[in-house]
Length: 302
Image 1 (tube, rainbow, N blue to C red):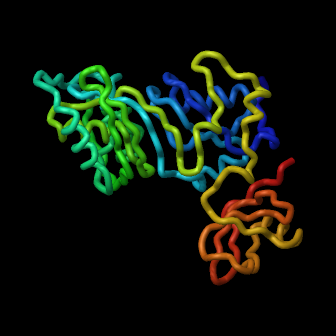
Image 2 (spheres, rainbow, N blue to C red):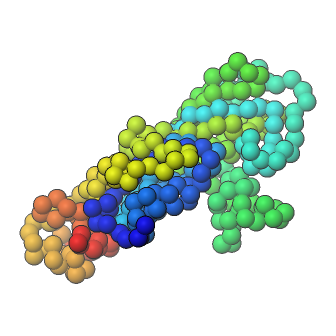
Image 3 (tube, rainbow, N blue to C red):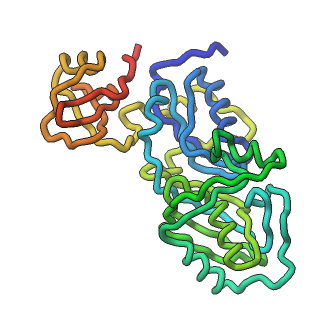
């Protein structure tokens, strides 16, 4: 298939990722099916994980940093009594707990203690960078390095015991940058028995919801036209910045040239989306005392 960027397919494509492929692998499959060079993803999912994976297509790749980053909502299962190098069931075993597992009341109490704001250490096998190197690349080669802990927010961490010993179903809402694997690891450490993630499904990122996502098959490539129908145009991407609409075609042309514009009435200081008079998304600007400064100018759809 010839690879070209088709303007009619600029926008946001929400994918319901199956377990198995990497996020980069999903990008490659969509790029192949739609015949696009420019495809990126926002909010990486581990190969084990399923659920909501936002992709940006064509001109939308320039807008990825303005997509909602959180809060993120997940559901899944965890297993107590085991510690692995990856903090999930796929990793090499470090320790197996040989005593009795904690009672459910104690597990739920410790889980709720992890709610709120706090520091979290990323998994040893993750995409987090240290000195320009991905942790998973370094630590899988026998070298052990750690990233600095990050401040994260856990809005809720709710658990329900399953029938199998040590298995709990959970739902969790967290800030951007939070690793659910690390949350489960920290729960296991607090209980002094170890804990690993067994399954994970992302259901929301801010206003983006899984029920609006295309269900990607783990094996079979989707039909091109069917997949294309799920692409949301630029104007419906649910970008974070507020909207400013230009008043006339003269301002539109000046914006496209990157020229400073008079500040629209009622606009607030800060970054904003800029729409043409007919509602088309032109790009991103910053409102300041001196006027409207273009920051990202999207090429005209041709």
